[in-house]
Amino acid sequence: MGKTTAIAATRQPFRDERGQGAIVFDAARWPQAAPRWLDPAAWAPPATPVVEGGRGGAWFVESGFGRGVLRRYRRGGLAARASRDRYLWLGEDRVRSFAEFRLLASLRSQGLRVPSPLLAGYWRQGPAYRAAIVVERIEGASPLAACLDHPGAAAWTATGRAIARLHAAGVDHADLNAHNVLLDPAGDAWLIDFDRGRRRAPAAGWREANLARLSRSLAKLAGPGRDGWRQGFRQLRQAYEQTFHAALARPDAVGVGR
Image (spheres, rainbow, N blue to C red):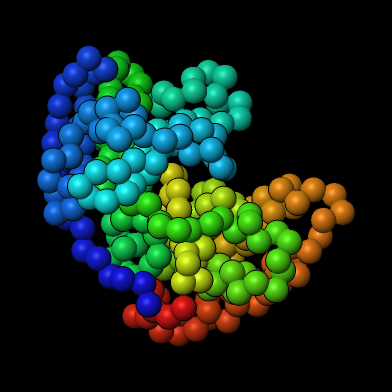
C-alpha cells in the first residue's frame, strides 16, 4: 500500500532582489528550507538538469531531506510567446506552486503514490509572479515511456491501478503523459507533476480525457509503425476499470493495494 503521510505546511513571507513573496514547506522534513533553495544555482552539490520529458526548468537536487526535484513553473504552447515563466497574480490562494503543494500533501495523506512536497514558493512583481516547487525524488524510477516496446510488462497494470485510485479520489491530472508516470524498482507506479491538478467529482468525461491524453502521448513517442504499446494500453485500461470500480465501492481504501 502507499504510505500515508501527514504533512503540515509552514508558511514564511520574504522579500529579496527578485520581489516580494512567500514560501510554504514541510518543516519536519526540511527545517532549514528557505527561498534561496528555489534557485538551482544555490545548490551544493550542484543541481543537475532533468533532461527527460517536460519543457525544461527542472533539476535534481540533494540536501538533508534526501533527494528531490526542483521545478520552475513554465508555460508551453502559445502562452509561452507572451511570457515563459510569468503568471497573472490572482491572489496567494491561486499561486500554482502553493496549489500543487496543497494537493500533493492531501494525496499523501490518503496514501496515494505521489511525491511528497517539500518546499514551494513564489516571487511577485507588480501584476505577475514567478513560482517554483521542490518535491521528493522517486528513487530508481523510470518513466512509462520506457515500456513502449514491452506491452506485456506489469508496469501497464500498475499504471492503470494508480490512475484509477487517483480518479476515484476525485483528482483530475492536467498533464497525464508517459513521462509523468514513474515505475519504481518494486514495480509500483507513481504519478508526478500536478501543476493545475484539481479535485472534481469523478465524472466519466474528464477521466476519459486524462486517459486519452496519456494515449496520445504514448502514440507520439512511439511514432508510426511502432504499435506494441497499444496492447500494453489495453492492459492498462482493464486494470483501470477494475480498480476504479473497486475503489468507489470502498472509498476508505482509495490508496490501498498494488
